[in-house]
Length: 323
Image (cartoon, rainbow, N blue to C red; front, side):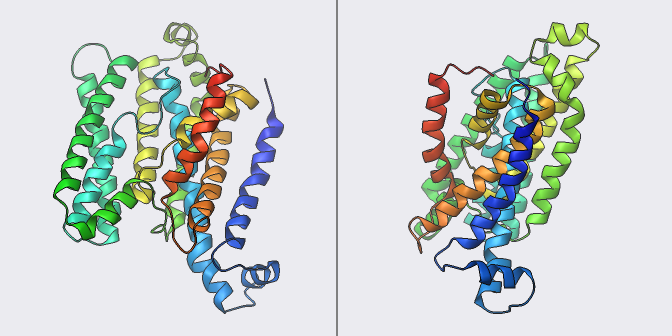
């Protein structure tokens, strides 16, 4: 099913969701307020809300959602598992441990983000090294190694939460469930997303072949081992960047690839950019709901993605959709 018009629709949807995020909040803004702020004609509360709070957060949410959806798309082909998502290989667990340790020792937000990135990279190298240590490097071996490492990180996270003072628990749990309130510099996240697209798009044809099996890919001139290693590192780096910015946000990398395969086909030349666009737009909407549905109280965005993602995934499962 070849639907290039879907990409155009998603290109139009992305700025609309960001515009929605600028409109909606505990303080309502009108179109004239936003127009004047964007045109540089206002310097009041509207400009402050847009340029210091809502627009950076919306752009950060778009970057994180795009990275998670793109990573999930790559991992589902790599592992040949429809339930694969960006967190299945333990990358988020390593990030959570490092970030929570930073919070436990009272370090600043920069240390939390840097620690999360370092923990993600450590977990990525650990899983790759253990899966590749002996024998053939297979998707099943990688998957099992990642699941076990993720379980180990989960035990460490539980230990940290158990020994943490009460005044630190709320911040730790909020970050662990997904928190975009610290994303003040969205340019970095969007550059990482763009880099991930640039690196993965040339692999689209090879991914189409790999989805049909390693023997098919090898028979048609591809190197399956080299391709799998490249996909693993691209997907892991995207996940590491997303987790370091916003914590663990579930379901984006799981349901977006499924949904796009259902409505737009499995050609990765379209699936990869479409996943980045739809994943970004989805998380912008989810974050807008998270900060407004119980305003002035803000919810972790991971709660909203789960509430939206569970019924969508069950619907796709009921349709019998296969990747």
